[in-house]
Image (cartoon, rainbow, N blue to C red; front, side):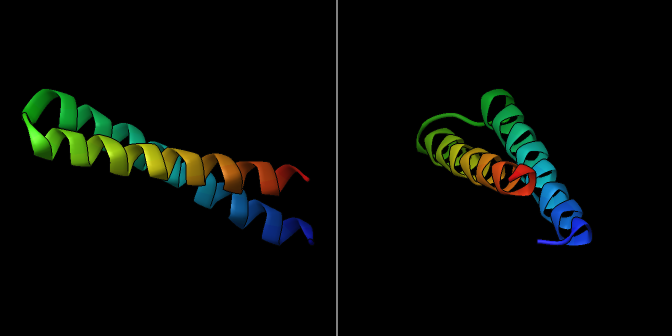
Length: 59
């Protein structure tokens, strides 16, 4: 993978992790019940995907 592609993959990973942090913050401060659980699960999935993209960008 060339260096420009690695850069874009790492930006996607950073963006997904930032989005996960934003979603989990909103979920914990503004919501309750099942919506909080759903938002937390979505944030967890985005965090894992961000980690995978970040790992791909360094290999």
